[in-house]
Image (cartoon, rainbow, N blue to C red; front, side):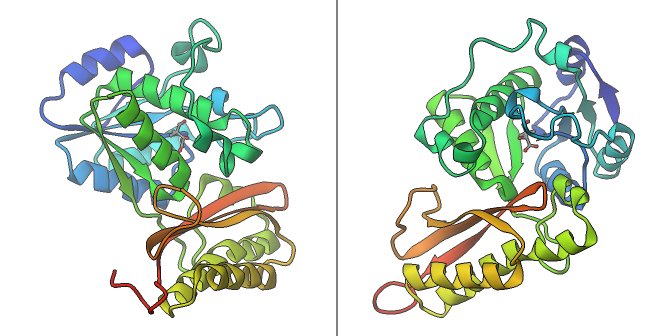
Length: 287
Ligand code: PAF
């Protein structure tokens, strides 16, 4: 049975009644098949699963989609039930921030100002602050985050390490539609033509990954990804398409790397990323 609580008092009591290893998956609701997979993975690796559903105002800029972000709690609870969640914590904004917007927040450091942080000022302050609060409230042994938000996952890992948060952070690979589009709650904003244009992101990443597998160097991998992006989605507005090492440092050496993309499709901003393997000067490096 999946129980739902809305207050921190009820959460604390319900959490105390869960013995063994507890996993958390934090969400903003509007759950889709990608979330369901994340929930199932987390559930399999722990004795109990707690899901949080909270659209966090702190991580939305003044011109972003906080008001129109889909709120679908009944459907979300059904997804949580199917995935075997024990407990759902769905607080109100005042329950999470009883004193209004918190004056003290988590600073994400320089990585928090790059990529997503360059376009979405203050975004990672808001994300890390709510993630730390939820970790303190839920007290999980394990916290699962989707690789779709790769910069978020990287920064949450760093926060846990830098601030000695007693939790193991686990990344879970992105779930995709059959045509390659990464699943996202924001995909529901796309019209049919925009949905086709949105394929530019995953097509570019796949082309970059194939170029890397074929032994091309960093520059050629990026050039290939850019070309395919422009060909597949001429109407999309590219924000960034970059090649980094797995910790998001630029100029990756041969070996494991990450290709990341963000773009506007109509009024919707989409992100995606893929692990790739870069060849060395003497050809492909063993994975
Ligand atoms: O990835 C999300 O849905 C959000 O950024 C998170 C981690 C739930 C924090 O609000």
